[in-house]
Image (cartoon, rainbow, N blue to C red; front, side, top):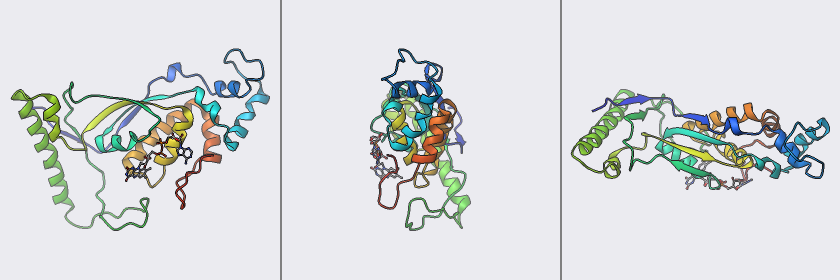
Length: 237
Ligand SMILES: Cc1cc2nc3c(=O)[nH]c(=O)nc-3n(C[C@H](O)[C@H](O)[C@H](O)COP(=O)(O)OP(=O)(O)OC[C@H]3O[C@@H](n4cnc5c(N)ncnc54)[C@H](O)[C@@H]3O)c2cc1C
């Protein structure tokens, strides 16, 4: 039986189609379809200036000529939140065909379960029994893994043996969204209301999108980035 490992890094993200991705020039060229761009090229600077206006005023259709794909590895409880992005295409590894990895997520800090007024409130560190909680946490991971492997060794199907594994085991999936949908996703998941581990994944995606589409992400940050406000609307145009 492989030893179980605990990690407090909540995941990784890889930009799968980065090398196939057109630059943000494609967005500008598509915005001036009435001009003569028959291929994606470096737009005239006057056209490039449109980009800021477009992002600010909500002409986001042009963003959707690009559809970045990421491979995300994260604990199952994070994946369940991310998979709610209903416009996305997903392909997830299957525990029916593949033996799961003995890798478990362990939070860096343990927080007190206080009654919250808002999801995004600053958490309070737990004040007692931290050692006992950690011990129980680790025990749950190792004992579920040992049950999983014993059942596999006795010939049980992977799809059934996996049923004893907890939500902090890791999964991996591909996720593709059009760019405007990624911006919506980031608005929801970079926000402090979002669970810390899910925010961590959103930050990885955000950094990679910033590198690929620097002006678009700069203008989004300036004009359209915003949390869910007090009325429950999201501040995208
Ligand atoms: C902090 C947090 C807590 C949550 N808690 C729960 C929970 O307890 N239980 C539960 O079942 N679910 C929960 N969810 C999931 C939530 O209800 C949504 O299903 C999920 O976040 C997907 O959001 P959505 O419907 O806005 O986006 P999608 O379903 O992905 O929306 C589809 C597309 O519509 C567009 N769109 C939607 N809304 C807007 C808007 N306001 N402005 C601009 N474009 C828009 C975007 O392009 C988006 O990509 C939670 C989500 C968050 C962020």
